[in-house]
Length: 113
Image (cartoon, rainbow, N blue to C red; front, side, top):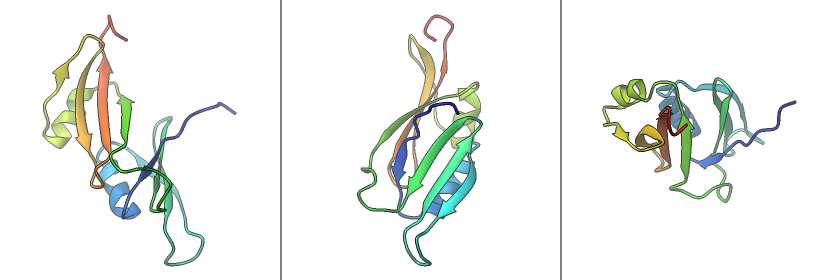
């Protein structure tokens, strides 16, 4: 087993959030509820990148920032209609999911990466 870190993002509606993350290339791997009608806990993945989306209060704070490295930030920016900025380490854009969580998405530059 490879060790990894999986950020947990607080969401109000896990199904709606998973739909938004699909636009970024994530797929839903599984969903758990302790009982019908209880809050959902969902895992989404894009390749080897994983995120947990949780409707449980207290699991995470709103306005969390996650950095996502991708091969083509321009494709992500085009999908969401946002600009790309150049930094010494990467070309980046920033997105907010429907729950206010921030995703900084970047493609490393040869000198910064």
